[in-house]
Length: 449
Image (cartoon, rainbow, N blue to C red; front, side):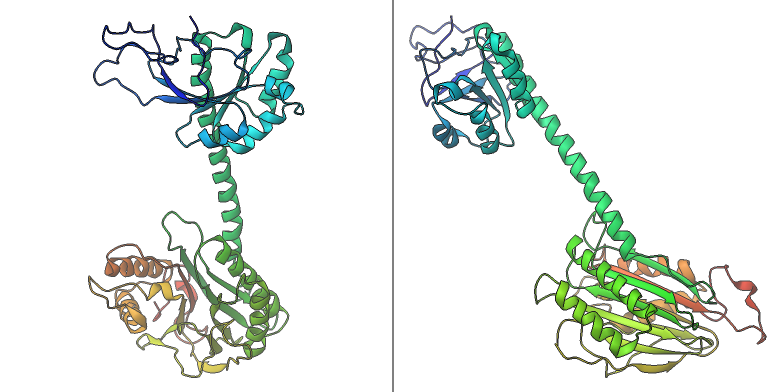
């Protein structure tokens, strides 16, 4: 026969018929017992929180719950205050009598809505009268997993309903996580398109290659960004930058700075004027004053033989000229990172490139990896050696970038922890001066990398 649920207590129910009490130990009042599970088949019990205020009209928890052999712990609460105290992480399901709204003068389904707000991650069943089936259906529309008729409740129906509600809640949570993951993926892809734009080099004789890899495991995005555009006067402008930190917030700021750089460049700004304007953009858009960004910009003259270089706290690019070793385009009077000093200046240095050359711009993630098991970092001189060795092997373009990323990871003994972006520009031998441009597209430039 049904056993009344105790007030604010906890009992233990299980599937199958009640076990006969032993002569020396009778079952405690209000407890539901069951045969012990076979060795090796025991499962963690399900915990059911019953919210019901009137024992004279309340349903009684049946003595047989069809829960597939799993025990059921029962907790009861007379109101939401008691329910909140009893609602712990191990509660699997909540059983709410919708008559509480009537007896406590609540609004239609108001108690259910409060329970759902109180326990958004828990499965919820509701009890209602058979004549009020529409109210039960409305409870499901509001957020309950199922409804049961109070007058027809038995152990088998309640047991199955508990299992169904728990599994449905888990399925709903998994589907919600999948949907959220897809939405995050879509947002990340949009940000990635902003970080990794298509270069605007139509009409230029330069070849472009780039690589990008976020530092966080399984991440799609980091704070690194780059861009390359050709203005109507034939000048090719290239930029690479790094927002401090990792993740979508830094990526969003990187996208903003990249788009601002492209817009300002197409509007005719360069050098100190451009970087000063970008700093104002950063100062107004960053979430706090501790965020800064490093930047390296190059504007390559239409004849391709010289360029203007600006560094804002960023590593110097590498250059390989025809017949010469790889070297850093380094100078000591570069400016600070954007967002560090309010009235900073960024001197523009003129560099001679010659007729045939390759330029590699990169973020500091490429050079901050370790060498072996010690604490020594690769550094700028180290990356010069790496690129020189790859160039000596005849690698260039996309091939060189892939090999460089692989070698830096190998030296580090595993994946790099910081974001990495690398941009490579190649200019082949000029027409009419020795070898022509038939090598274009073969993977490397004559005399370059």
